Length: 112
Image (cartoon, rainbow, N blue to C red):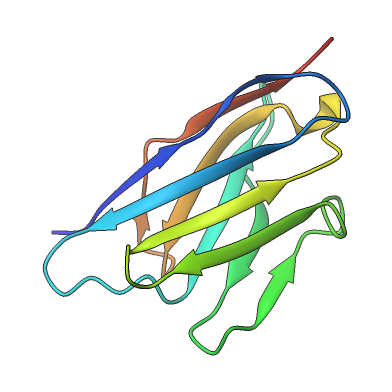
């Protein structure tokens, strides 16, 4: 069974940075095709970033140029580096493996 555990969330001031991690575990689990999504209070969950098996990345327009998705295949961890954070980035961030498996999320709050 695949387990995804997010970490790295917290409170940060506008303009600050955070790095989220998503650790995958399970028999023969592969972290290829991992995505990050987020859900702000009162809003639907939305796509943030994707890293495919071939290394292709895709980002939501709202985070392009500020967020970077990467992975460590040895550690089975996918990262989301978030820079120049804005209050509208406040949300629970979830990792999603191959559209099937979800973590429980980590809360990011951007506020002064």
